[in-house]
Length: 130
Image 1 (cartoon, rainbow, N blue to C red):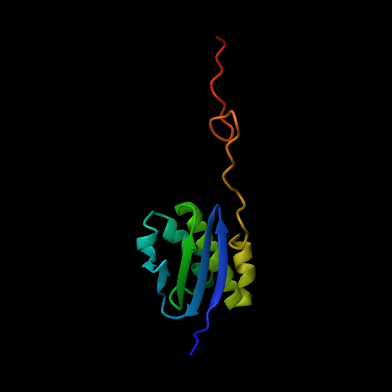
Image 2: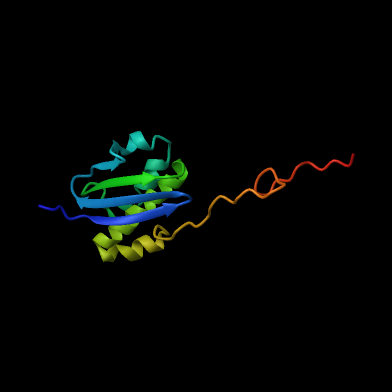
């Protein structure tokens, strides 16, 4: 028997997260690890739980996440967006709540490429007169 789930794709910087939400007991796994083990930094788990807190579904759904690319900040943002999209598919009445909180809006800021003759994207070498 196929288990019904709702899927959302989230992206941030160079990270992509595929989030699947199923009715359950509050189990949260990221890349087959518990959430607190995969995201040990302070504030990451609180940020990830924002969509669940907005909809009051923290203990009534199981969440499975596959995230790849980027670093901890980008992956956290991607998981938040994917979770919000999956929850809004699960119950369309939650969509306005998520949209008002800015959880469904893609943060398009990316790292700027390095330019030739510069040290980084915009930092120029120190000017010397002689």
